Image 1 (cartoon, helix red, strand yellow):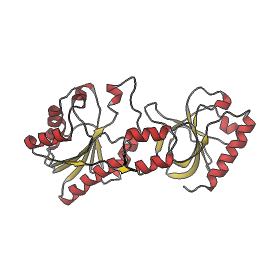
Image 2 (cartoon, one colour):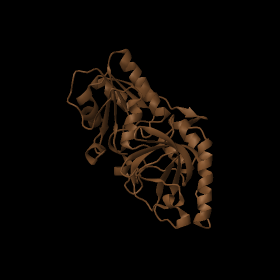
Image 3 (cartoon, helix red, strand yellow):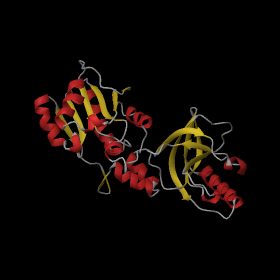
Image 4 (cartoon, helix red, strand yellow):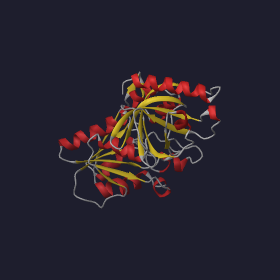
Length: 305
């Protein structure tokens, strides 16, 4: 899959396009994208996803932006697995936000791509203040020469799956429900940076992940999962929270890799959350904390990846 961050010059490709924010690339998003990819292959066209690198709310609601379920690099990997030919990651900036629905379609879709067919979700909005909807997109298609396929909601227990709903599940620590909605385990990625080295002093060294503030973290607690670093995979235990036993003040994301020996500083580590083990708790002293960590790791060693 080719990834570009700017609109291409108009070419001669027969483009099929999926439009949306696609944060999390959940099962509803997958339904839209896979339908588009299937049709493009059937008609010998080029499949293309046009989305944003940043969440629109970061510009439109700077004091209360939505947290991202996936950073851009993870989002790109998930979309690539669906067989997409081209991914366009646009910056959602003020110029783009102020465009009318007509101007957005003309400048960002028809101009560079001249698509045959556009796929969107049932609740897709576009243009200034989200004033455009699938009906308007279809109406504009009569002038611009494209058709529109609107994909209905994908539901679990009669509830439409949405990125907002998944954020709420993460905040509640409901990892299995999150996996159902995403179609994959929630994944976090960050550079390993120096922490307070408490884990090492207790005999359980941890990798302290640098996770940007724009990412939606799960409810504080201890989690089992799978860690990936340097092409290798390890079972892992993550502690996400404030470390109250040692009076921590900053939120941290620390991962202990079972069976790993070596230095991880400066390397990129990916962690897939698979099970919530327990709540974060303030222990009476570090000795009690050490005993609990040993129990957490022993439990993780017997859990399936």
